[in-house]
Image (tube, rainbow, N blue to C red; front, side, top):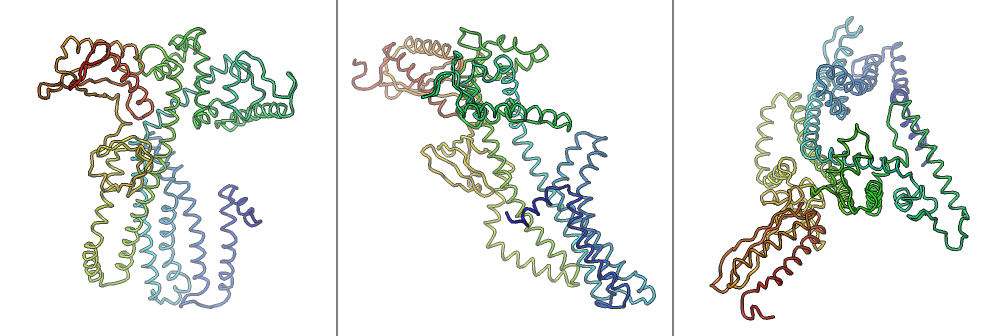
Length: 590
């Protein structure tokens, strides 16, 4: 970075009032020079004294910063005034804050048009020698009026875009973001209790702490509490690297204390390095850290000798005031509602929260990109409207121009009609229907895809073999889309052909065998299994249909395959045990 770049960065880092003054005052001083000179002579520009001409330019320059100040203060005024009447409407102050530039343009154009004619025609010189409004002044006044109207249309377009963005994010993502934040805060609370019972690097969870806080690592301890000696280093000897890491931990603790004091003084939260919340957020970024977090939480609460975490194990650790939070946390982990939580269940839920967090981030990024492209389309429309406003104010034969333009647009509609139709269909698909988000597993036309990227005009999908498919949104708008992620617990159906001589008793025994299986595997399947005879085929075989209900949807394909393999193997063993044979030649041969 050059010296000029460093100076610019330093200026941009100071308070906005001081920064604005640094930009405003030098130019204002330069503009004041011709004003002072013009006050002592009669020099003119286009029939107007230099004094009044540059006075108006000075007003325009200062008016820009006044307009910026009003636009900047408007959200705070709105929040303080409207927030007293209705708290729910105070949230729109954020929307007004996002309209800083359009509001500045509108206020500035109003200042320009409101001061132009009074300064040019109502100044003391014109009062002594009235000359009326000059032709160029009339044209300039019309141009400034057109600027006001165009700024108002531009502001309306930005308000529409902001309302679309706010409503879309609220409808599509507010619940998902709220649930994900609740889960992260719940993990943080559980980690805090875990660290209260078993302090970090205290000997019980050194391996997990080393993964969760790699920067604070200082000598790996085993579960038994014994330090592992570094190869080539005598046991008990402190190496220079261990000393540096230990000093780093001390500095982190000191920074945390100072950060906490700063947070108390300023009234703002401070998530220093090593805080439980920061550890949880960083742990969700990698698989190993997520599993280390799950192990630390589960092993801290589970009773010694038990293979599962019980509700009372978690509730007893929490205060009486946090009993509801403990019950909610246990229910969150106990997806199968069987009254206990295994280590695998906690690992699976933490991985699920991590995937959801990444999916929400990617979806919001793609949605903002789509809204940005929609904004570009609307800005083009605003530009066309601004041109028509300018023509209408400058030309008396506006009707003729409008008729000619309409004829031209009608002829162009035959060329761009299909494109406009595709844009409209894509807008409806993305912002109204919105059948999926990034990372959703979807079934489209019989094929399974993972949504990789969403744009305004197209969507990138990935097949199971890794092939990327780019599909136009206008085409997807006409198809049926099965969204697996948004589905509840899903039912899997399998059909097999068995020998025509298979008896009702054998089918019933098969049903009972599979009911015993789902009861034993209650973590993965609901306690229900149905068998029905589907049809007969030429009195040589009959088709039976079996349905089993998973405890979740099939968004996690690896988990679905694991469960399916488990119950298909159990089904094969039950069929072999009951001597149910297939139809056709050789049926029943062993």
